[in-house]
Image (cartoon, one colour):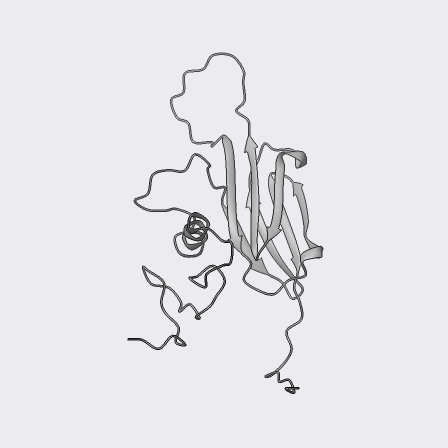
Length: 163
């Protein structure tokens, strides 16, 4: 029998998952298994669930990176308007969703159709502590940028007096 305090590797490899991490088998976190699979594929397979039936929602390519002060999600999604997006932060998951309408210009016979249309959705586990009320999103030149202000990390170990 294994020690319940040790970290475990997720299925398919990847970094160890600390025990009790929200949504990773901790129970009672409100995160459903489908959401967990989606987050897993975002973290380990670039949003592509190999061997699974295709989702009716497509997944725009998105870079996630940090600056000194912010956590930034940079989504490549041309042909939209700011009101076409839904951006929500809940329980440590950022959800970006919307629908890109097809361009309707009469009857068409496609020789190649690579531009995705229809509903899309991406979910990302927020990898660093952030200030939830700092959530901001802007859309410009075909890119959606979502910013969250990072919370400062305290240097060194922290302790508390037990009362």
